[in-house]
Length: 281
Ligand code: G4P
Image 1 (cartoon, rainbow, N blue to C red):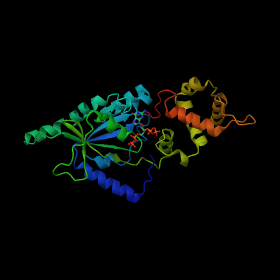
Image 2: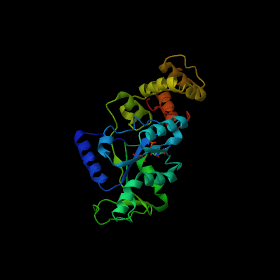
Image 3: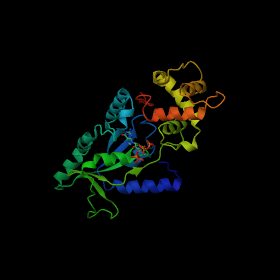
Image 4: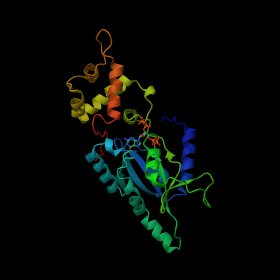
């Protein structure tokens, strides 16, 4: 999915999210485990304010396990509960409710003291496009995906998805914009295809990815393509093309095909589990 964000659109989105926040107890903030920094909305902290939140590092089975652990520790150090999940395989999805319940424990105890009981915990899923919000909602609610219908005091258009008898999700996730003015962020989003390919030159993107992988985890490229990396990134791309038969008549390498092949291998996890971002110390 690719969304064009305009200032007017952003103001409207903010207003809708602020309205939704009034209906819920906790925000489930979804990040891509491979790029938690770049998949974060720059205004989210201000938007959420004091509302409880739980961070989910989605697509975790494509990210480096140890780096994901570092991220989870980083969030915990910040006082935020975090969990690695994979909405396709279902990894840790059954632990989300426990985390959510824990995060609102105090808030609900206060409600009980005031005599308010018997309402499920309500959550809103927030994240930038393509981070996996819909897939996550479908996965967590698959056993009982029936919507609970309108409730008194809730805007007619708002529907709740029942996860279990004590936990409901707002049926429409909040879609937020990424930090699109930062070049590194834009590249990382493009690598994982959260930004449409058509707006970026595949060769340029592949060269940038090679440069990043060479400094991050060269063995990912060496193991997959059995190539020498002691040369410039464009030459590496050509070597990948040669190894993989991306040749045009006359023996030249078709570098666009090679670039698409590399990007495809990276995106589908064929280069192994890779995290492009580590928590900053
Ligand atoms: P969104 O609502 O946040 O925009 O994201 P959505 O659920 O539509 O998911 C975007 C893409 O990411 C989908 O792939 C989906 O299958 C994939 N995805 C979501 N969660 C996970 C996960 O935990 N693990 C993995 N491996 N993939 C996940 P798609 O439709 O094929 O799009 P694309 O990947 O080809 O861009």
